[in-house]
Image 1 (cartoon, rainbow, N blue to C red):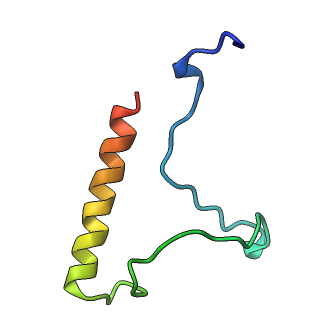
Image 2 (cartoon, helix red, strand yellow):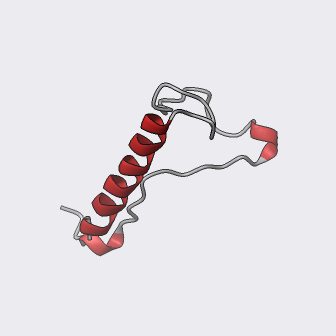
Length: 64
């Protein structure tokens, strides 16, 4: 309705902003860590995280 085209938008999967000593933005966080914290997660969780990264990357690329 406003005459804007698809290329007038920005597509992204996530954004992290840790400025102002993490006081910026709201505290309502809907992220998911696959059930385990940190880089020392089990092999199955590390595989799941890697698969999710690939899936979101493909989503981002085909969104064009």
